[in-house]
Image (cartoon, rainbow, N blue to C red; front, side, top):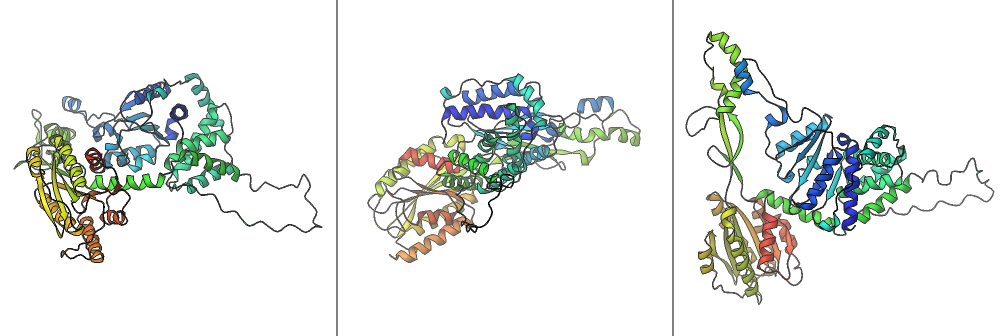
Length: 566
């Protein structure tokens, strides 16, 4: 891993490479929270793209703003269909804040615009708090440069130095920069060995390497340019740690009487030369990759699956309240609410024809097909069901952790529309201690005294949580399950101490939770990771998180990280 100062220098170089040919690079995926570090990067971006059109988007921007629409006032006033231009109609740089919240429709439209070679580029500002919050994959694949400044200290991020005169000179030199066929082959080989399946990545790395050569005043891509391309394009996309190639068996020595090649015929390293840069690029990539890359990726995928399934509640459409959506065609009546402006936009292009058909010029002609109805997206309440292991000697500690986490979550429940429930399992069964509630007073009273000790009927706890989740879904809530335990199941569903049958019953309940589409989290509170709990989490298709020294705040933060929406 590199230090903060080197990361900031790399971000400076990335901006310069991007400024030479923004459309060829596609754009920049910047992962950083809102703050002074990101502000300094964006100030450098303003200098780098000075003279180009820069437009700021919104995650909920509509198609009229993107592609253009009908100028309603001009159309109705002059009787001539007049259209406005969209942000995607002219070349320029698009900036998308909160890109991790962009919906699939907007991501697809932006990806198509980048593919159409309209001279557009995109700066995606990812403000996600963890690996489960990230920009849509179709956008990440089209943005050449990936930069992560999420934990960079302000002291390591001085003002970026952008030499605009050097960029102008390098832009003139860029068309003359050449790349050998062996270099192109090496970039493709490095991408494959890093587990990158997209064909765009090597092409984007090639574009960044050419830009780096132009900034250096060279007309041929050299090793430092290739390393820059690996650092900015290929290494952030890696999905596996590259392994060193197996040594090939040595060839038998030629006979003694064979005439050695002359200087003109010497081919000692001619075939191996193209592969030397590839190994150097792989070594550079290894230095940039974290040692726990695979673990981080697996945790991020599991957390994203959980967040997608639950989050802050499932989205549902309505016509009364919630986040506004684009209007839809429909008929008046019932509880439907007419979108007057959208209706006029739909009717405006037909006014000239309709006036000629009716012979009346003194009125607006509205047809039933013009009617547009308002739509809203509302999120249901979220129910977090804690399933706590109250068996064994450490039951009191686990129950204390769960109690504290529940109270912390409920303290902010009103702003997030959360309900919290508690299921405790011990002895030969499980009990619903606290049904889904938002009342902090009732919660403290119910959690005052809880019994502990006995066997571990894990399957009974999961079954009770599954039944409670079904009741919550029936009330319109979106349930999630958080399991806290440090031991393996040893009591089956019938209440008999049978370790083998108990494990089978727990697996069956985990599969039932997965089949129901419920999200959640398995928290291992043991001093050492408990064998089998990670497998149970896989059966439930939820993240597995060992927290040997968990307290209430750690449990609360883990649940929020796994279940919070993008």
